[in-house]
Length: 595
Image (cartoon, rainbow, N blue to C red; front, side, top):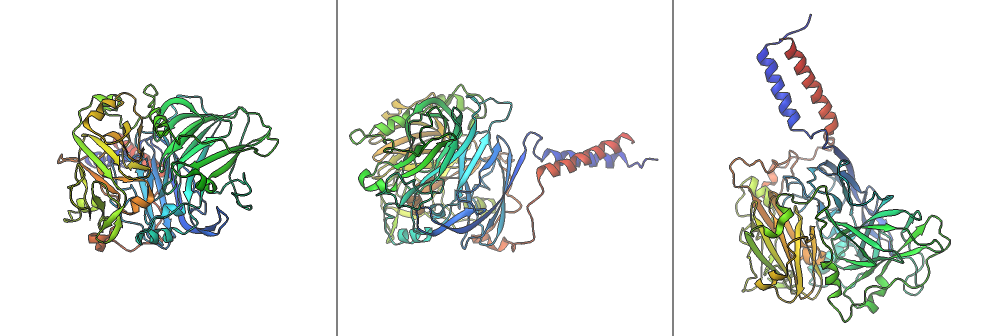
């Protein structure tokens, strides 16, 4: 005999199960899980023991490997002695800025606490990286790769590489990040870095005078005749680097989520915060190893020689050590347009299939009407209320005690001002929490004007923007006549040369509060940033996910924070939940059949 139940109850159970199933990731949208233990280790990348931030005792940290539209769950255990946030640079989170990992949207993870990031990556592909966004911590490490692969049914616009290689380059100081912070707080410059690291290691001893003995260097082993995909990220503090491999061509294929028109480069300038993907064919003979070089740009080369990063490319059948001088960097001492023309040559592959950033309307971005225009000008640091600060449009951003997105959700008034100026202010600079009021589904034109004497790169969270123009001098309305309105690269980080401008276009289709900043850590730390607040005015807002259950609270909302339950574990995986609810659905059908 079978048990029966009232038809109304059976129907009710079915409806509950259907709703629960609808809220879960689909079978195609898998979930990847990672546990990050963030702690200090002692390392000597430049031969001097120092405090380094590691993930799971690794420096650089492990690579997150996922696929378009996957759900990502990262449980972070903060074993530092200060607050922590992990930021996913260039990774666009679908319908949510709650997990962005910057102070404008998230309260920090206190020391000794666990906190779990849970988000879905947007319709994108490519190579990105993560890093700690607070307290100058990126200068001590804590970074790693974040790879978003195409779905299997979507072809990539090149033959599948034999292997994937992550390469992290960046300038490096032997002083602790806390000491660097104190120097900036005291109104000092950081000075010249002590070296350039490649994958967390110092230079190969290519020169006995410039490089002391006993430094551990990176060796990348490859098979002759094979083609590899190299994802190269500049994770440094503030130095632009030229990347090259002795006697090998770099076929550029992708940059921060966009497939590029494939072009060969003998070297490429990679600015702070930028990521590029190259296809490199191992087509040289194996008589020797080969140099991999990352050297400083736009500096006095004779003084900076000692900070050049050098690793080794070793064929499996190599017959000897790398020899001879390092491959030359571009010689543009008398032609300052070389690097800019190189940047202009990087174009979007508009014929490539697969996920694209901001797909709504992005295929014909040059014909979309602009709704908002912001001219953002930076200047060398200046004194505000007796302290050395960096500015955009004369405003030095002050992070609020209550993150902006939390203040909006709980209607905490007075946290910020929605009055960021569209043009540089004429009066004295000021320090305040001033935010850009973005128009939901608007199309914003942003002109980044660099009136500083050094290179800057700028990054916008939550979006890929179209880099449509750059030139030396002051931007004017007439400059729009030089814009690339067809295949400008879509990316999240762009360089702005000293005394020059860069113009970007961005479709504001992702609701949230999104950080716009310089990637130069010293200027960012001193306030050269703001946020773009994008709100759906519709009463029934289904374009943004609700606040997560495990949200942290601080500032005016600190009383809402419950003590950390150290016995708690990360939530069950989506696969287990899906199996459970599938069983319930089967039970629902079973009972309904016998009504």
